[in-house]
Length: 314
Image 1 (cartoon, rainbow, N blue to C red):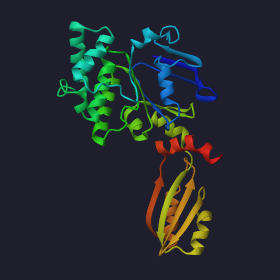
Image 2 (cartoon, rainbow, N blue to C red; image 1 turned 120 degrees about the horizontal axis):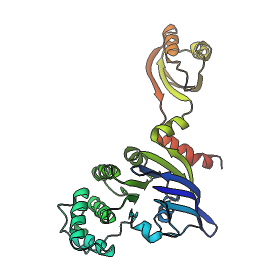
Image 3 (tube, rainbow, N blue to C red; image 1 turned 45 degrees about the horizontal axis):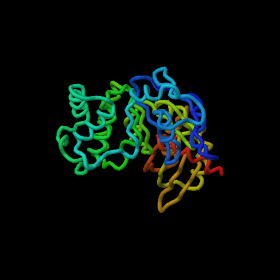
Image 4 (cartoon, rainbow, N blue to C red; image 1 turned 135 degrees about the vertical axis):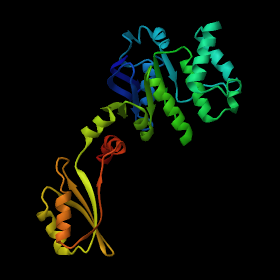
């Protein structure tokens, strides 16, 4: 388990991370989502003990990082954003080197090597030089290095950056499989990848956590009014004007006229549904409905709302 309390990091006058709080339980895959420069990497470096906080506390399995950094690091596998590989080494040599750093040798190393090669799908490249491996395989190699000591916790900083769509799917499935047996905390600025991979999402913006919950919880908490896009033919000025009176609990927030048709954007509360009344009014007014499409909230809408509204108000 990871417990973070009032964790902050300042670089001079710059507050990179501002008093963040959260907990992650064993067996969870949690996504740390934020735009570039939001504070994701700084927070992860403090959680792993590679960076001292300005203030606050990190506990990993009830051990305080300030007092037990080395012990905690034996329980954590960390894949930084800039994957620290040695291209002149073979995959075997690299994993052997990482294992020796962690004092894993002999039969213990052979067992660990077999485990990570199998988990990360490296059977075909074990004796290849890292320089000859694809970007997708390099990410797998870095992940294998972070897992060689069989840690209880995996912390992955932007693990799919620079990968092509096929490679992203491969790494995503690997992370999901690892999440069945380990606590996984991964950061990304790719919304779709976070949404497809994790159990819970934390959104960080300008060093502060502005949302924390499952995808469904975020959707529920941040839903506003529904927007309905309605496209019709044969509407006239009178019938358009009478629409808001004839159909209650809705407002026409935008009206656009194009050749032979009108496009309306209609807004209404989540707990009402005027579509049947709209349809009946359209029929009675002689309209031909070409389109009636509600606009649903997705993670991108939530992310933009939380990270852009302060800029809009600036």
